[in-house]
Image (cartoon, rainbow, N blue to C red; front, side, top):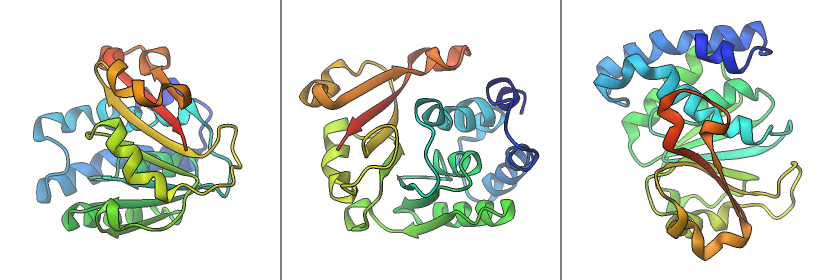
Length: 206
């Protein structure tokens, strides 16, 4: 929790309590359904919660914004973002049912009324959203093709609607085909921990 306090000192008491509750919740659920590497659970706040909140550093979503998190796994980045933006609607999607179960249980335990979940493949999701977020494992061009159909036309935020994903490593070649409408920001510009040295948040306007 020290990391959340360090970078987000102005959060409310309720938000702080929800972030603090994540540790016990994920330890409990991870012992039943492995959504975080067993070795990595001790790094929950740095590697998962704060990493997810890199998106909040890039853009403060306006109330009423609709966001879909595809391939959410155990709820990242969707659940930390839902805590940070209680007036924004988050729809968490994953193709693995047991991971969606963890998302449901964690969001219910936290009392997050702004979270919905769906067990489906992203290809089958036809709804429109202002933004799609993801901790991306697939190449950026493939991700853009997958979610373009889900981006609503009318924008309400400081940045036009589009895709915001968390990626690591060298992205120069990945970004090249869509360079004119892509913004790559190093997470090390927000967070000083060594883990973020190679991590980036990538925004593509769609």
